[in-house]
Image 1 (cartoon, rainbow, N blue to C red):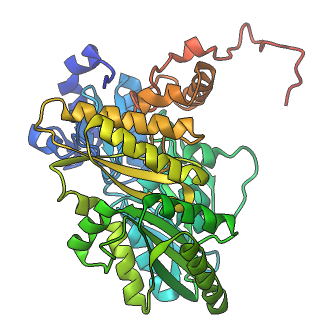
Image 2: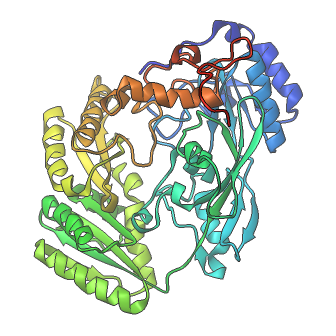
Image 3: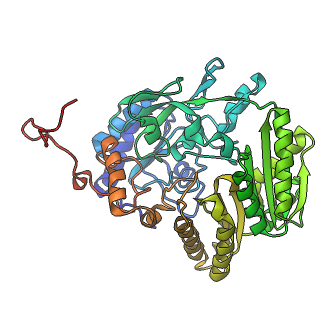
Length: 495
């Protein structure tokens, strides 16, 4: 993996620049000692590490704006960072850039029940929003497995999902407004508490932009009333292909569960050992299907899903009998990543998305790839929306193991694109999938996306080295310019 070469002029001027940062933000808001920088040297994709020039920890939007203006003036790169739980290297530091940490932006600013909206700072954790409105009977729908730790600003940057996003959507579907600071220090507000905004969908562009366009300093999210009834089914199968077929058949029947998650045998056993969720240990594939809504509807859909599962050769059909049991079923799924840590010294978590109808085929081909590369793969999926999370097991202490894991991961993601899917469902591109972007987009596509970045960040200072395999200079992309006071194409109408 290649990152941009450090700017030697910036590196030579490190001490004066850090001094300028300290004058701008006195106290403990600037971290420059090596021990302090080590805490920020990577994100959840920990195979790669780098020490930044400095870490800046502002507390207000005005401070963020001043920091960005100073960096723009001195042409210093900026890597925005939330809680550091990302799994694509999106917050990987640069030696000649600062890390702009938003951890101190950790307050819930407003809860507006009449408008079903909550206004928060970006450092608030995902789970904290649901906890804040739980007593009033509301919750925030997107729920990544890391929801106890991941920040809402990072969720927006990566357009994160979760186990209940099949029915209720990912972050972008539950987002109402943003406050964003641009690289020149301008503060812009996008959207609000209203459902639809006039003009271009700038909030849609910012969501999932991975820190390349601006720094998010405030987020307004939509909250939902908790459904009157919710039940979860454990559906065990003697073959993963049967489990995959059951997913496709449930959706084809017009049933949209609140969640539809799939784990293979190795994941089931590791998870059951980790948290005693009550999973059937003889299952080669285990589906968790949650249905919610009015009681009569849930009863009918539960029966229909049970019949579909039987037709797909289910060996176990078990329904939760209490809220505690339903939560325990989900605790197992959300504990899958730490549970698999007991199976191997290291694992590499992938994130690709495929059409649901190709799930059984992709599972079979992934098994063949695992055998060919000689590395085990544990599978856990947001199966209902085709989002795969294969966990590739390896040992970083063995020479060549990490490289083989990366090659296997690239082969799996290439397979996802081959069958009509995409490189990422919710983890983002970052550095992990950056060099695979050419499998999905041609040069014209990538240049067009980079023109959007140039409109927000003409000097390429925000999170460079991420997403794009080759970042063109804005001038190379043919930016429109004014010549002698006249725009090109004078025959076009003016607005």
